[in-house]
Length: 241
Image (cartoon, rainbow, N blue to C red; front, side):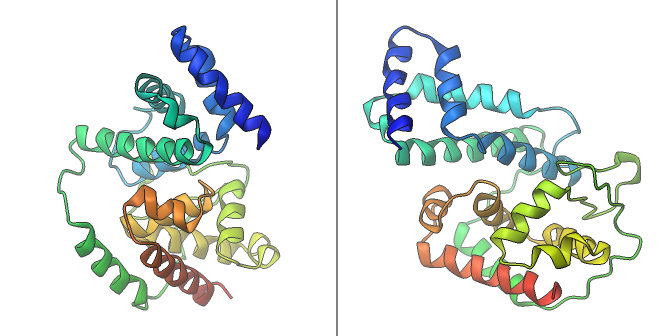
């Protein structure tokens, strides 16, 4: 933590000297998993056809995030905890803006209504039909898809993302990683999550944020985030046993 604090103290100097390049390098070192989080969100948006494939890269998004933090940086941002949350908030806002710009998703819905509907969805039962729905590529490190063979909810999870989900959802790693059908089910369950549920899970599993931090980023109550995570875990554990 001391090393991180020391790194963050130089941000003021980089800001003063207009050194955006080194400023970005410090932020990249500060939250190394932010790139993975962005890459995952972009691939999901592409797969669901919210944005065209290849229109944005993680580096494109990171450059914009770092520039925004650089322009808005002040002494309060030298606190590691507040800076971490700020980075994830800006990331979510920026990605949301990109999607709206492409006119794939323009309707704004009240967060309370979204929560009610999605909690109902999490409590509903459904049948997982994985036969023929998924083509698995074990060598992939991220989410991939074939545009010409796109089917609704066709998301292929690579080993890296599977490991993060298995760990965060308290699933048995060995039983899933060695079972093709369970891997298909994991991908199907992930794809079936609605937007808010998936966003919470992404922050939890790929962003490595705590419940309190997720509540701050999503502008939700801590107890509501806890309810979502609990129901998401139960849903996955029920169908992957």
